Image (cartoon, rainbow, N blue to C red; front, side, top):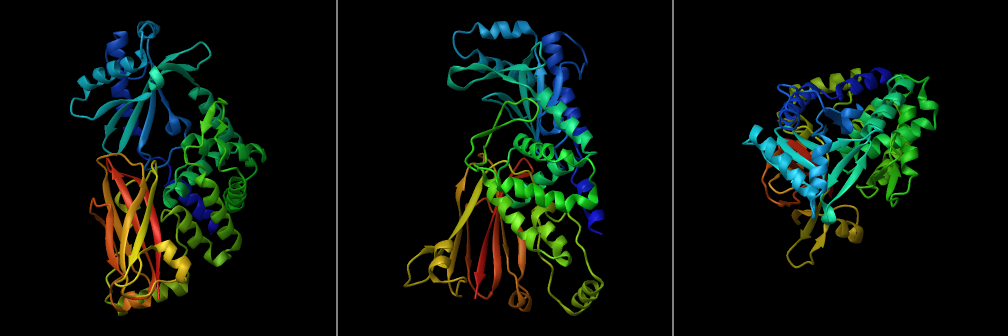
Length: 434
């Protein structure tokens, strides 16, 4: 039943490695407690796990752990006296303290945080100073340096309150939205996700009388809400703190929500699982009918075609944090070169055979040192007949991938950016060939 599938999915995507993250955070706290407070082997005092993990809304595969360490007030006084950018000097001092604990780990000061790259996730440490109202003053190195205020404890408190009022439904939908953005490959900041889901829940009595039976209806209503927002709005007021949470993904979620809402509005009950798998990935259970089971058995016993398709979710944790856009140059001797999208708009819905295709990354903001993977998937009866469905995911570290149109079918190409063992960006382009 769909109710059971939602329950299975929501349990599957919950954060699995929080214990390991907390151990790392504790080791960092132990080092800073010794340095700044003279405390030996204290791995809990002055430490606050914040961000999505602290709010309870992170999902399995999350690649960032945000922590805040409360430093003594005299440290603030010391750096506040600097004539220029004491904030940068504070970050550098904390970085050097941690370097003595992790001499072989990449640690750097970056704007407002000290970044520590562990395998599988990155710790972003904010050195802060707790205020009387439970807010924190923290350094911002931009524009000559300044002190800013953040209120993560208020955000955590309000998220927890909403989750309690909704009997756990709020966290499930914060998790599902993260899974959706990871599958589709667009930017959607964690605090903005939690804020907008919170706003929708607040307008619907927190769905306090709902359960897994109602998740499809709640999902449709959430997409309807998201698609109606202004993609050009620069910020929203964050859940709990009412501080500005910026629209860092340039409103990409609005268009994606429109597409998701339309497909959910049109799909029949017999295909709903397939649509949800397309939205959320293979973690959502596939519903297989008896007829499909029999057909699958006959296919396996009669076909020599190797099942070669790979899925990035099976190879790496996926946590989309950067933009990636790929396109394709279409050429043939004696003809003008077009991009794939321009060619399809000009000449029809499908590419003819004997075209030379150069897929390339045309927009990105991913970090240096990342690995680049490509996947080419051939679909359709002709691909099966030729035993050329492909679908392997290969690390090439090249920004382009060369192919040719050889036979008909609804093919596609995907590109993935991998950093520290995590897929941090992805994009896909359809390649229909007649």
